[in-house]
Image 1: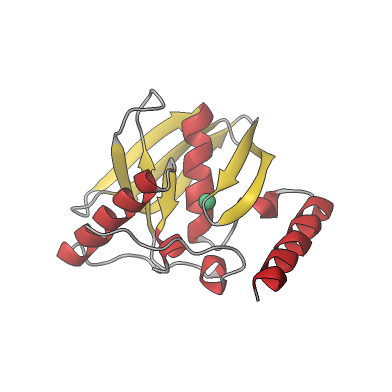
Image 2: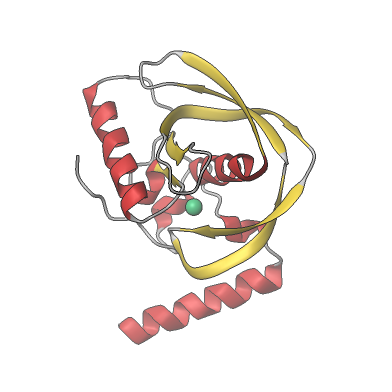
Length: 169
Ligand code: NI
């Protein structure tokens, strides 16, 4: 296992649509292991493969009920097949520095996905866990949580990042 570098907005890989995974081999297991290690190191509650520069449909999340618990879960080619209700919760992202904001999401989602062996699975989650899954699945479509904010908020954030990058250069 090794720690991987997390790409930051505005890296173009974060905007690409991720490829579907078709081979369930040891390279995939290694990638998932790296992602789990990188997620807990960050620390974060979820990580999508494009965030470490791998444009494939793989996400890892921490499924533990209590905040300090560790229960890593790997979802391959995940897809939201049903959604219900709505909720507004505070979100941040390991690829979006210095910003948290309220985002409106579905309250409950049913996700179909493949596990690390390629077996088809289904999972229904709600509340905070549903937010995490929607956020991570968005990453596989090149969507970031800032895309759910108002144009004004998003523009302000982009200006701030430009300034930060200019200051570094
Ligand atoms: Ni994120």
